[in-house]
Image 1 (cartoon, rainbow, N blue to C red):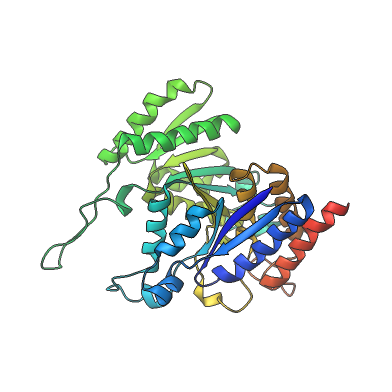
Image 2: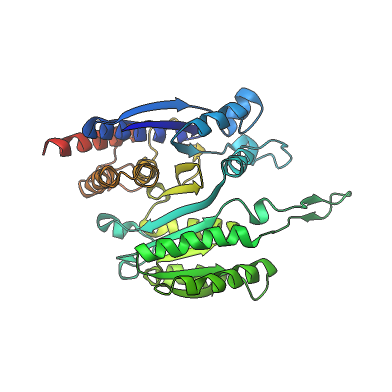
Length: 359
């Protein structure tokens, strides 16, 4: 199969972890006989430095021309520390999602048997956790109008806006995911307070009879925030709006023991983007210490969700699991005195993928 992949390394550790994912993707291509064409483009602070824009038109065209997009990270301290900056790296992320129509962020949370002791939660609470969030990405408070400040600059306001169409397309995806898993769907909202949440709940309730094999639960976002750390195994598929999903998925990510472990997919009708859930981690940039596993597992999701290549995806996941079982890990999750560099982990994973083809 011929695969055309756009590479958007971004900022901070993005380029380093992207390099490792490319090593693994190339190993998969060699094993299974795929032909891969890459095209790299700038986004975030790297794009601002080069063009003045966080998501230039050239980058957008590269994404449109690709079959799938691998994305690293966005963010730079020089913008984080300047609240008055008019152009910010994160604007590029929001614009990219909007222009590419990436309305659903798929964020799984699962545990690795060899890393249960690394989680901040007790082993008996998390062992066997396997849930997935579907977060709406292109609506809500991040995009709603009006927004800004009053003329005196003393009052700021953001608008949370949702339409039935936006809610329904994500909800239907949630029901379909549930049908392929444990047939349990949780709608996360704040319907006791927010009008937008009441529209979410009403829409999901209207759709539920079309999926009689799926059990639907409705929970307030604050209750979910508590239950995620009390009993994450109670959940299977959760759907939620943009802001709630942003916060809850970061909370859920540390269940596994490190934010450097969880992948994600951002899906639209035409375009599909795959990225690790961690940020740009500027403190580690250039030090060859960042954990590349989330980026590599994002590439595994790419093989499955963008190309329907489940065997290739499983080979990558198996290699990651093997690396953890054998202690081939970066300092954030390694046992004391046994850490590997970012590039060394990438090299090991690529060789493991090729080794499997000869077994």
